[in-house]
Each structure stands twice: as structure tokens, then as C-alpha cells.
Amino acid sequence: MASSALISDTEPWKELKAHVEDIKKTHLRDLLSDAHRSQSMIVEFDDVLLDYSRQNATLATIDKLFKLAEAANLKQKINRMFAGEHINSTEDRSVLHVALRAPRGTVIQSYGKNVVPDVWKVLDKIQEFSERIRSGSWVGATGKALKDVVAVGIGGSFLGPLFVHTALQTEPEAIQSARGRQLRFLANVDPIDVARNITGLNPETTLVVVVSKTFTTAETMLNARTLREWISAALGPSAVAKHMIAVSTNLTLVEKFGIDPNNAFAFWDWVGGRYSVCSAVGVLPLSLQYGFPIIEKFLKGASSIDQHFYSAPFEKNIPVLLGLLSIWNVSFLGYPARAILPYSQALEKFAPHIQQVSMESNGKGVSIDGVPLPFEAGEIDFGEPGTNGQHSFYQLIHQGRIIPCDFIGVVKSQQPIYLKGEVVSNHDELMSNFFAQPDALAYGKVRFYSGTTIDASAVIQTKEQLQKENVAEHLIPHKTFSGNRPSLSLLLPSLNAYNIGQLLAIYEHRIAVQGFVWGINSFDQWGVELGKSLATQVRKQLHASRTKGEPVQGFNFSTTTLLTRYLE
Ligand code: F6P
Image (cartoon, rainbow, N blue to C red; front, side, top):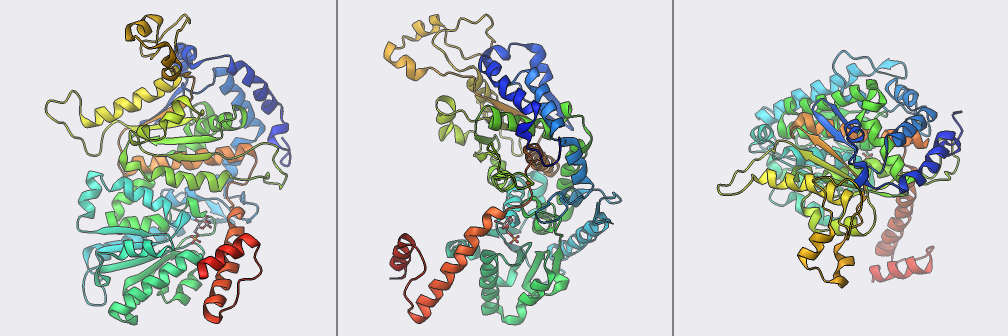
């Protein structure tokens, strides 16, 4: 395919469009009775198991998706990413988050320079600095050890680190290592978030890490100034040097802000904000909390998936399969949303993180060459840990709209409980739901099933069962389920730092695969700029009205009315 052509003009795309009619005639109830198909749709790498047999797809569908990948030059695009080519063409940048977790000694080039030594220089600095803070050899202005950290940042400078922190908070080795320490995240410019973050903290024992790639993001800079004031007011202006550090690509602005550049941790323009959790953005605050050795394991987990993504053939490549299946669901079956359903409370911040990675990356309306897309790219991601979600929005997924679901389960709980007298352990109870829900969605519950094969686990209502349950005729439509609703299951061996790194990288690469095949630029985010510049206009108006009493002007009727009411 020529680089400027749209993927939707290719033969494989058209073939998949036509193939939808074949798939519409199938039902997962029948597809799941084909053992060969089911076996072929289970893939394993490094103890991570993916089962995609509950997708509305046959083996022919998968073949057609591989042809689509070929037409999109997917392999070449992956190679170009790892080779540091400027695939983020609208910003003329490499996309090298894989270099952030590459083992020492690896060669990955950007602008003709091997970036891995620079990565390790910063990692070594983080290790040394975090050990000084954690051991108490670096103390605050009044001589006290700094045991609490507030990381100030938003978007990619917040969501990834929060996800990893939340996932590690209950991990036994991490708990041990974090004893006596606190890590908090101040993201929203809402003063309520400031209040929540500083409540209960003593400036004398607090270290503030300002995390911002650009060091210009309005919310982060205002929150940073607010915390600088909080420290100065309590300990005097000179205390800022001991209590504030920074992570940024813009070290000039860091210094201008008043943070000693020696206490700044760099990263590079080839790291996208939403892909930055493996840079100092995540590694510094997480190392302060858990110690560098644990965070190094997280990097190793991500790196193992990077290698797999780079080298595994597509039919065994977990991120590639996931990406292609998402394209099948969105662009061909017409399912615009995806539910991310981890059966682990430790992963409660995973969906919010993936929302940004996915929706900021693939929420685009034009191809990488600027041609308007004749199809919708991107999907609506949302999610909540199971079983909580089951008691919230699953009703819609079972009987309302069709939403492909990602079920993410863990074999070994971080915090197992075995209650005497219970039939199963608490984790088994949780996982019973993880195994049951995909079948409930796939098989449904029908009034009468006349198919030839009924799997033992099918929740099919036979005529006899209905009669036995004595279900009133008028309730039958309410109590039946059409089934045939797609999901996939991802089973991790446990949820230690390494596995958390694996999970992160699987999703990062899956999203890149989607963007590569759709032919968009997944690594820019121009769509967030307009709102930011309009907020600047409003900010100016608020300032002029409050300081000089100037009337609201230059806005439409609606905004003028709202602003006037607000100012009154
Ligand atoms: O919301 C847009 C965005 O640019 C994100 O991509 C980014 O992660 C976030 O703002 C924060 O940016 P920065 O790290 O530069 O403060």
C-alpha cells in the first residue's frame, strides 16, 4: 500500500467488510464448540495467557485481519518505531518509550544517537537520589527525613504513575518496602484536590515532585506554585530547594521556576506524555515510594513484552492480536466502545490510564497524511474492576448494547484470604466471576435452543428448564439473553511489579497497532489544544473583571450569560 493511501481503500479492508455478513450468521454458542478454533485462539507468552475465542470471529477472520495488517505495512511500522524513525510526523519526533525500559547495553537510536546510555544515566540518578531520600541521608529544611511525596502532574504525567502505584500498594514486597512512606498525586487544578493532598501532611517531612513534560501545563504549574507557597509559608523560601524537585524535558523552565537543576530528572521529546510512565515521570515517584529495585522489575516486565511485540510472529503476538481484534470490533462490527474489566482491585486505576493512552492516541479524524478518514478510528474505553462493575454497568453489556469486554484476571492474589467454613477462598470467589461472565455474555440464555451442540458450561435455558422454573410467559423476554457478545480473557500469573509492567506494555502496543493499521498518527494530540487556548481567553476575562470590573465581552450569548452569573 502506498504510504498516502487509506487503509479502507485496500482489498483486505473490503474483504473484511464483506466478511461481516458471514460472521453475522454465526453465534458464539456454536463457534465455541469448535475445539480446533478454540485451541488456535489461545496464545501464551512469558506466563501471560490470552484467550480470544469469545470474539465474534472465525479463523478465517483472523487470516483476513493478518492480510489487513500486511496491507497496512504493520511489521514495517513496528520496525520503524523501534528504529527511532520520526513516526510522529506532525511533531517530527521519534516514538521510543521502548527505550525507557531497554536493558543496559541495548542500542536504540534517535536522531542517529543511541539513547539507551542517557536513559540509564537518569535511572542511575533516580536510584541514587531515591536511596538518599529513603535512607534519610537527604533531609528537609528542618533536618527531618522526607517520608511523604506529593507528585504534581496531570494527564500522562499522572495517570500512568497512579495506576502503577495503586497496583503496587497491596503487593507484599512493595508494602514491605514502602513502610512508613506515603505517595500522593495532585492532578486537578480544583482547589479541592489541593486540600485533599495536603491534608494531614507536614511540609517539614514532605517532598514535592513537579512532573511535567513541557513545564508549561497551566494546571500543573498553578498547583506547583500553590505547593511552593505552602512550603515557603511554613519553612521559609529557602526551604523550596530541599523540598521541591522536578521531572521534565524542559530543564530551563524548571530552573526558572526555582528548582535546582541538579534536582531535576530529564526525559526526552521522543517520549509521549501518555507513554511516559517508564521515564522519570513514573520511575522517580514510584522509586521514592517503593525503592528502585522494585521499579526496575516493573521496567523489566514491560521490556519483556517489548521484545515479544518486536519479534513474535503475528499469530502468536499478543499486542498485535489484541490490536487487530479491536479494529475488527470497531471498524467492521461497528462496536465503538471497549470495557476494561480487571478482576483485581489493585488494577482499579488501569482503565483510567488506558482511557488516556487509547483515546488521546487514536481519537483522530484524519490519516497521518492529513486525509479525512472515511471511517471512525479510536474507541471509547471505560472500565471498573470486577465484581464491582457487575453490580453497576454490566446490565447494559448483557442485555443492552454490545460492548466488547477485556476480562483481566490474576492467578495468584496479592492478598489471599482463606476463611474457614467458606466453600472457596475469597480470590476463588472473585475469579469464579471472571470465568463465568465471558460465558454468560457468549452463550446468553435463550428460550429454546435447537442447536446441535451445547457446551457443558452453557447457560442455555432449555424448554425443560423453563418449565421447571415455572417462568411466567410475560417474563420470559425479560429473563432471556441473546448472548453472542464478544469478550477476551487475559490471565496474568500474579500481580507483582514485573506483571504490572507486562500489562502496561501489552496495552501500549495494542493501541499503537490500532493506530498503525488505521493509518493515523497515534502519537500527537492536537485535539486538546483548542480547549486550552479558549481557557486562556476566559482566564483573561476573569482577571479583567475581578481586578478592573470589566464587563464580560467577546463571547457568545451562552458563555456571556454563564460567565456573568459566575462573576456575580
Ligand atoms: O492533555 C494534553 C497533555 O498534553 C497530555 O498529552 C499530557 O500528558 C498532559 O497534557 C500533561 O502535559 P505535561 O506533562 O507537559 O504537563
